[in-house]
Image (cartoon, rainbow, N blue to C red):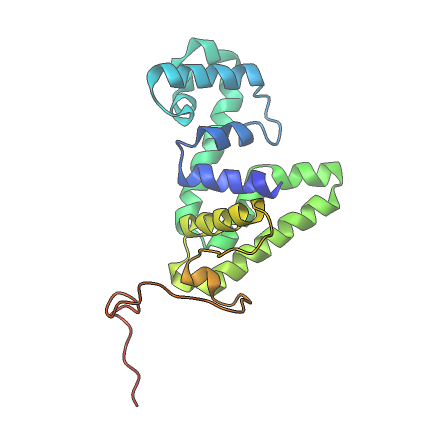
Length: 197
């Protein structure tokens, strides 16, 4: 379920991400079946556009008329979330994605407390990340942060060097941290004020 929510976030950042769009378009169920999803993919491929572009103009495609209403509702929700991603703090926005996508209601209906707890942990981790990064925190930065750790977790546990940003390393427990390319005026930035002696 955390991967599903992260897929929602990824599609909001990059509407051309057809792989993640396929994952979320009918999760939770919206009466958009695999036949319809495949048809959208075929139309998008033929037109050389992302699938979201086909969904945005669903009424232009007779082959999709049977699924027109649920596709329009999905696109309306997607546009609303895109607008909220600009105006809301990241942790609040992630909570809205969980609610407005219907994901939270689905889990409550299923009585899946463990999965609800996982989403609560996700919101907490987003809040902690936002607190660490401050004003620099954006949805794009958060997704890059998540991707870095997802890729690291996918590997084996043998001794190896982990490459990460300074923000990612900050506050984490590592016995050694090496900073590369410490060029004066570049890092730290010239914007940093010199503290009085």
